[in-house]
Amino acid sequence: MKYMKFLTLALATFMLSEMVLAGVKELTGAGATFPYPLYFKWFDIYRNETEVKVNYQAIGSGGGIRQLLNKTVDFGATDAFMSDKELAKSSVPILHIPTCLGAVVLTYNLSGNPDLKFTPDVIANIFLGKIIRWNDKRIAELNPEIKLPAEKIVVVHRSDGSGTTFVFSDYLSKVNKEWREKVGRGKSLSWPIGLGGKGNPGVAGLVKQIKGAVGYVEVAYAIQNKMPYGSVKNSSGNFVKPTLKSISLAANIPLPPDTRVSITNTSAAEGYPISTFTWLIFYKEQNYSGRSIKRAKELVNLLWWAIHEGQQYNKTLLYGRLPGAAVAKAEKIIKSMTYSGKPLMR
Amino acid sequence: MNKERTFRAILILVGMILSLLLLAIFLSLLWGSFPSIKALGWKFFYSEEWNPITNKFGALPFLIGTLVTSFLALAISFPFSLAVSIYLGEYMRAGKISTLLKVTIDLISAVPSVIYGFWGLIILVPLVRNIEMKLNIPPYGVGIFTATLILSVMVIPYSATIVREVIELVPDDLKEAAYSLGATKYEVIKDVVLPYAKSGIFAGLLLSLGRALGETMAVTMVIGNNNKLPKSLFAPANTMASLIANEFTEAVGNVYLSSLIEMGLLLFIVTAIINIIGKYIINRTTVQMRE
Image (cartoon, rainbow over all chains, first blue to last red; front, side, top):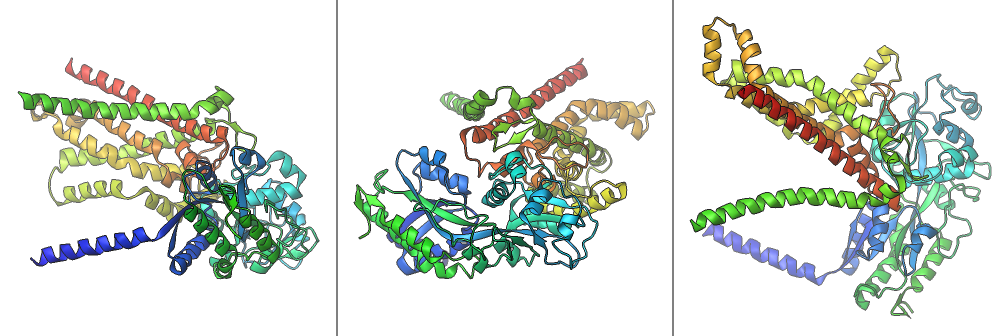
């Protein structure tokens, strides 16, 4: 008898929760893994505030773009903005809004964990396999106060396709001709040298284990795991340490109206040069695949929330906050969204 | 009678579904590979270059990486699985030690592969690095050798279990006949048991090999993920399964995605060919036995 009672109770609870869930409106998104911790937090808070549940699958930027093109999600997320060629695959316009800023830092394993300084050429030559020892003159003259060992440099890179690799190679392609011609930019590269680690933890693990190793990881990952990382000389000639502030400052450049811009090698004097936006992507015309106007409005509300209220959570999760100019551009883009040709906002 | 017929129909149906499923997987892989086959042709199979930026995709480094790690792992694991099988099948069929060994073997296969990879990364990689330092080669720690070691542990249960069962199946009258002629235990095992169990041993090896060829997670964590043709046993390399797992999520562009699918097709075909050859050898040895 007791057993039966318990079963009935369990069933009732189950059905009740089902009913509650059915009452909550749901949006779906998919894409980038890099901003996933932030999005997870955002959507959790958003659900508490608005009762709209956002189901976000961190399947990678490539997957996010594919799912949006297949119209199986309300929005996608990507670390590298869609190229003109990719956008051309869609018969209707796709919009981008930036949500936060991230950066790629150089981390290394040297005794004493010194604060190293790098120039663009030194970074490129290390990853091209042309600077092979730590006490190379080119590194030494940037860091005269540090006694560098004669150890061999072991290069560690990402083995999985990733936005982090894209940003890093995008930067190197801008600042180094040889890199641009020999390697290029992309989420997966044909690396001249080095070992591959899967994900930030894979790269960090190898760097931590191998004396003399150097690798690149996301700034949030490096800070959380207390890894040493160096400052990089930007295009204004300043050596800038990656901080949330210097990363946000990197976005202080003239932005195009569609916000699709690479901010690596920024012209901002105090900006960290290997910084990037990450974007949400969605359709301009929201009436597709039989979506209701209500759903379209929910999406607009979510996007608006993300670039305003959502921004206060960026800092705690170690993502750079959008500068005012970027927010203003994003507002304009959201306002341009339509349903059957009519604007969804004001 | 009617029941008999329904039962038979169900059996056939289920069997057919399985074969159809396999065929469907093959066809969908083939279908997905078309853009890459069209763009790259045969070059895909012999080119050494894997460059998603210039859209040049060659499977050779990964094919070599897969075959080398798998066959080496098999070679390392074989003495162990054979020894365990002989011990369990001939010397200690029951008892506490036997149970302990059997449970251990079962557990080896039950451990998720990500745990092997993790263990390899923390324990094995530093060990290999020490060896490499003594040998005066670049001390990466990760590479073909480390991946092979991990794989060889992982595949032991697959052959050990089957081989043990086959050894236990060797008819007692055959062994008794040998003993009555004055053969020692070693001679019985060498001249009666192993020859009799030959095809079963081979089947066990095949199963282990299949497991090694497709292993992804553990390998990707310790092989170094270098997409170039490996130059030495200690060099970082990559395998087909590991490459697919690494690059599939972020692959954009038709040819790129399609090349990864073609890599899957290649892995499928390699596994199939090895299985077919294996079956052929098993059949031949069984026929020889009967004769």
